[in-house]
Amino acid sequence: MTENADSATSDEKIFFYGRIQELPDDVIHTLSNDSVVFGCDNCCLKVLLVRHAAGDSAGEWALPGGWVRFDESVDDSAARMLQQLTGVHDIFLEQLHVFSNVHRVPHRRIITTAYYALIRPDDHAIAAGHSTYDVRWVDIHDLPELIYDHADIINMALQRLRHKVRHEPIGFNLLNKKFTLLQLQELYEAILDVKLDKPNFRRKMLKMNLLISSNEKQTGVSHRAAKLYEFDEAVYHELEQQGFNFEI
Amino acid sequence: MTENADSATSDEKIFFYGRIQELPDDVIHTLSNDSVVFGCDNCCLKVLLVRHAAGDSAGEWALPGGWVRFDESVDDSAARMLQQLTGVHDIFLEQLHVFSNVHRVPHRRIITTAYYALIRPDDHAIAAGHSTYDVRWVDIHDLPELIYDHADIINMALQRLRHKVRHEPIGFNLLNKKFTLLQLQELYEAILDVKLDKPNFRRKMLKMNLLISSNEKQTGVSHRAAKLYEFDEAVYHELEQQGFNFEI
DNA sequence: ACAAAAGTGTTTTGTCTACACCCATGC
DNA sequence: GCATGGGTGTAGACAAAACACTTTTGT
Image (cartoon, rainbow over all chains, first blue to last red; front, side):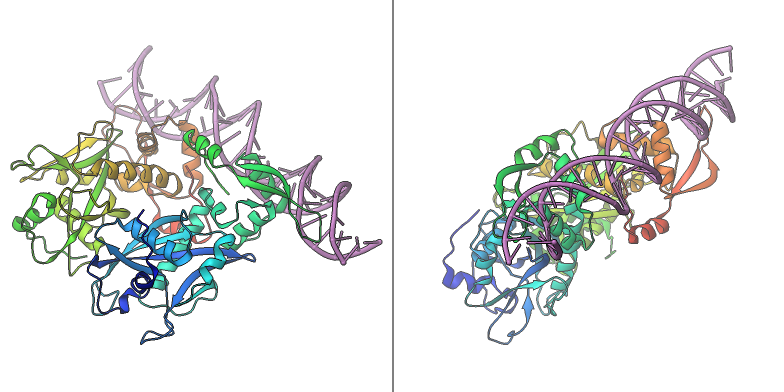
């Protein structure tokens, strides 16, 4: 993963690549990346969107994205972009799909590899605090109009997230390291847009043996404090080898 | 889907793009496609590989692949390549992953979008009958050494197939339109590399209501002829809307 | 008759669901 | 003491696994 975040000029290259007429020399001009960054706050599923503060594209919302440099893989370019945007690395980041319709960007041929990323509440602030551009968490039910095919990209990302979250324990990447069972349940309810039965959800989760019960408890709540759990990645990978099937 | 299969020169462009030093003008020079074409024969899972008959790459096996033209999407480029290779269109064809390591192809920067395809026994002959190049079905357990990162690509495709086949009824694309329940079972056994219980498998399948029982029976077998079934796509899409979950 | 696969039935075991219930804590 | 969520128990419906069994057909 390349990591030369010389912000001043790099940021210029990251956002709204489509609108920058003079491209840098070190990028592949037909290839970009775009990321759907999911976050979960107050039981709402949100997506990170960016908007140019000024210029002819002012006011238009888009997914954060950037160019692919000659000296990096496409995956790395997406990770670099995310690192510059959120300040966080080692984020859950996976390829979603290549969007390559000939006319997806007017007057240009730009093929984009779309990614989806999951980030924890602890890291939300960093993302939202970007200065030069308008960067904002937007509720998934309340998306503005977006440039190009970015709405399609979000759509597919959401479908993929919904599907994947039911078959693999990736949801944990949307929670802080330690969480209560109810938080986990509410996360699933937010993503899948369903109501789940509390006792049954608890049992199902606990029976999988994927949760390490820390000895800590919730603090600052006006009711009985819940136990905090952590996701046990090691056990998961073991079980995975044995053909274990995570199902929610 | 573009369909100008002027074989003579087009075939030249399709195979072994990596070895062609002079690229055509109408393609994006950094972008290719590669497809893992799965077929199932005699209860064996196979992959379609190609080999140059002559030249300095003679004897080296590779996935069938080609360049992406300026006037087509990447998906279309893969479909076109497959159509030229197998003579069949409307094949099951899905994006797998973008492979973009900087050094995946020596001395060049080529980013490939990998696909996986499923084709029916009825169409195997066409594929294998290609003239100019060596095109061959190879058992998945008996793969030769492959150029570049093509082994990785097959690996990922196999993983994806195994995963997907358990959660979505895509396996039917590897069988002819009409099939017996045992053929279906053997298909699953070949893909997943497991033994399944016949009575239970039958019941599970039939209970899903995804099979139309034609009134025809198997012919030319030296035992009681089995009923032939067809996959009912219409019913599947209905059930899918209602949140139906195909699980094997 | 026998082989080979088609197809059915049954018992056991476990898992999912729905819902009733008690527990701990802050206000 | 009551609201709020934490956490447990349980009966009934339902589905999975294992395996014994009968039926049909070609040789």
